[in-house]
Amino acid sequence: MDITIHRLDGLSDPLRAAWHRAMDESPEYANPFLAPEFAEGVGRFRGGARVAVLREGGRPVGFFPYERNSFGIGRAIGLGLSDCQALVHRPGVVWDTEELLKACRLSVFEFDHLVEEQKPFGAHVTGTFASPVLDLTAGECGYAEWLRGAYPGLAKTTLKKERRLGRDVGEMRFVYDERDPRVLRTLMRWKSAQYRRTGRMDRFARPWIVGLVDHLFEIREEHFTGVLSVVYAGDRPVAAHFGPASGTVFAAWFTAYDPEFRYYSPGLLMHLRMAEAAGRHGVRVMDMGRGEKEYKDWLKTRELRVGEGFATRPRPVAAAHRMWRRPVRGLRNTVLAHPGLREPADRLLKTVGSLRTHAAPTPSIRMTGNRTGPSTRRSGSE
Image 1 (cartoon, one colour):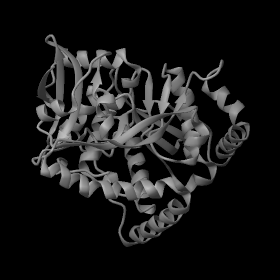
Image 2: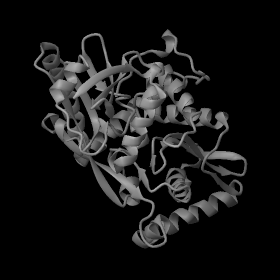
Image 3: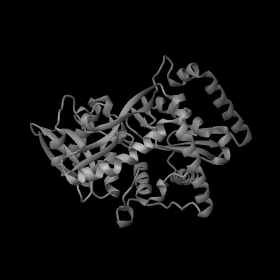
Image 4: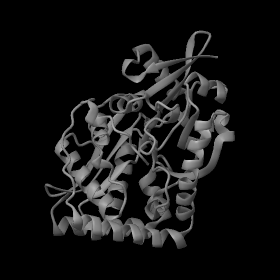
């Protein structure tokens, strides 16, 4: 196996086409987070983003995007943002993990949403987790009819709230692929406020994440399109979602709504309308991403499994990194796995968020364009 390393800002058209071909040949790699467009987008705003290209007989057969720091610590591309990670390869390709890490000059490679099929990484997986998906072709008449049959009460209540919102505020309108960047700014403000209310890290306070989302919003390709979906009441947006879509898979990513309308369940309404519209646009699967949420349990038709862990080489820095990161992950997973712990933790975070929200205003979110200067090249975190 021949392995070469490439910068993502100089990926050639033939390599990009070979990457797309590998996605097309294996359904488990059809997720837009595995597309070169996502990796290239991260590379515009993050230092150390690279892709290892695996060749057999001189032909590119595998693509391994990653980020590397100066200490040889590697992480999946967009770790903390990406809901699907893998070495994308053509069917039948086998690789050696240690050989791969050596070629990439990595002492450790950290991942948290690894596709279950990645057998060479199997010995390095420390835990697997459910990632709910919606089969938009479920049943004879599609997903909407499947949901009405599986959860008739949920569908009836949601549609009733939709009609009530239309009467109270204005005629309901759903736009699957909204191209107005001002609505994207509104979504970011809502999401930023939500993060702060709930005590979570505000991702949109990080310029590189704002820049990445702006960049992905402009991409409209066969294997990757940034899709902004909006629920309007009259001319007023009440809920919005932004996420990437490939030709067959739509990834749920950033969803938020105007809290003034929370009693109308706008988030659930958004996902229902989004699933219907995505199915009409030829999408077969909506990937909801790892994480236990009640609405995901309602909407899912099945679950995938994704893994987290650390692939390492025998280096002191790898041992130190694993000793530092694994207890943090273990504590988080323990809390998430036990409702008795999760609910008090959520209450604590919301209390902290309430105090933080009253102490400081929500940061403004500015258009970033395609800048790649020092202000955007900051380290992210989960």
